[in-house]
Image 1: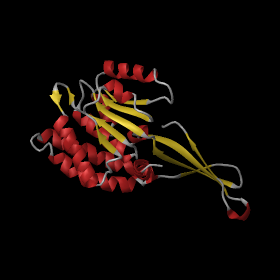
Image 2: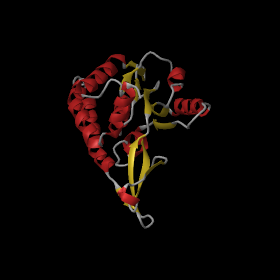
Image 3: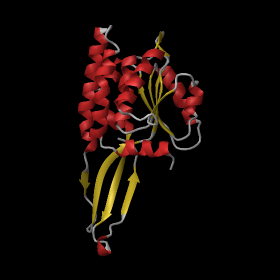
Image 4: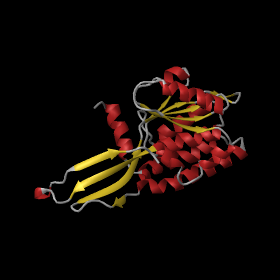
Length: 236
């Protein structure tokens, strides 16, 4: 395992509370970036605070009913490499929310946010990434790539999901491109309108960025050596 892979794995295995602490350290400075737009900065602060509050349930472990002699615990983990991107008609507040959602759920993130809705996001996206790195998000976990073409970004190895703010036509086009790729199905998490932006405030929104797992422990193993089996399932 390479050094970068170890860093990414350590981020995934952190508790949501540990990741939340790091991200909260950056949140105030991120909001200050938009100080000249009071309306936006207030909305950004509210959205980030709600995401932090909703993330508390990510550390829940639920004991499931199982056969005699074993225990079965349900929990969630980040899906893996996530492309967070702004489409041509992106809402930047949605992009910001998706970025924080992808990170707090334990995913490696490639951030592509150079422009959207006729405005340049290049400078502000670089500032946000700098604040997150300064707060403790490892460089290997969060990468800014504002220069690659969408086609090349979708071709990345080990890509597990794409979180995008765009109009429905662009989302459908990207979904079609992803469907043509070999390998595992890449999930698309899209925000295309005001109603969908409101879903980012709900308690179950973060579960779109994770996968379910079940840890089964043989509690009757000879000598007390339990055998473990982790089964990855589809996200909620």
